[in-house]
Length: 215
Image 1 (tube, helix red, strand yellow):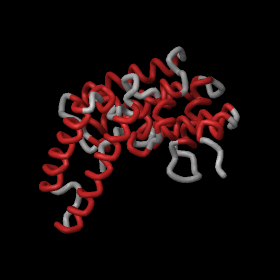
Image 2 (cartoon, one colour):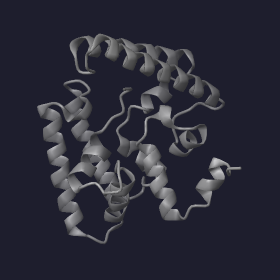
Image 3 (cartoon, one colour):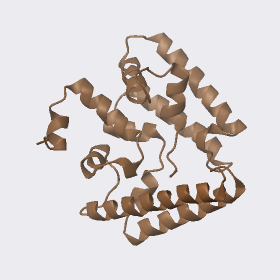
């Protein structure tokens, strides 16, 4: 018989809990359990966990149908038809969230990872982390002017990422023993898709510029 999820989490040491929280922060909300969503501090109204589960089921089914459609039509997710289909699906998800009273929650799931990491790891009072997130917020304003650009697929998004990578590199080199460096080292492991820590540049891209879009 397995132990309850919250018990297993609380039995971890502090470092492992931080790594686990960072991993959860990087996952789409539809991958998370109720307990994990609570740890992430998602903007869920009181008593709306069941509705969040319903929204998760709705999105999961929508994604299954979309994947089957791609195979049937022998097309890719970046084709003109698929992009149009995806836009309709996103509108349906947003409307479903509104019907369930979860509009703010659904909007919060689209934040870049660093905003969830800030809350999950309690980094709000770290001055260097605040500088980094404030700078990322400014760069996202430039990206937002041309519309949401998943994956840094535009010149503006690439420029913003290059600016952030350089700024982080300078700050990290200034104090290699800082709490900021320690946090980024932890995140390079937690946000990696395998056992190899992310490079400094890849960490910046994942942490500050990846946004979750269904699919």
